[in-house]
Length: 140
Image (cartoon, rainbow, N blue to C red; front, side, top):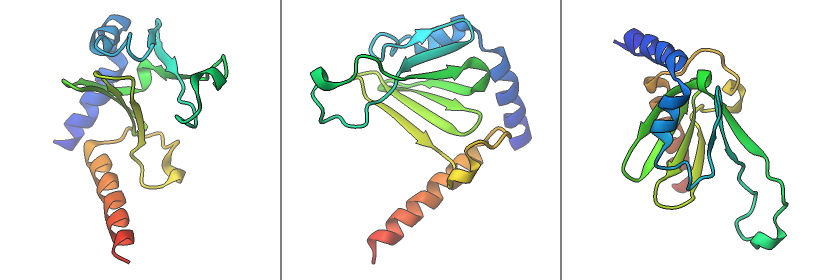
């Protein structure tokens, strides 16, 4: 069954069109200043500190670029839209405010550039490993 899911994700990622991406991201496009281009979508980067007054932020912000070919899935929910990349990175866009979350679902940084698409089992295992480490460190 996992092989079928992997195959579907690979095929689906290559089939995403600009229209499909725009439709799936529709609830968050305006709220998060997302620009959907021909082969990618872009949104402003996150500033390192939310405590800095807006007037003191730089005029130009770094944009995050996500290529359609790198997308494993886009999952819209009532309160958020999740974009999972084939490398295992997860972007979560709130539909109620401008909060964005970026999660690296790998359990260590050496896997970030891993070429093979990530399965749901890989992600769940890495999240569980991270939770176990967090819980263990709190018991000391």
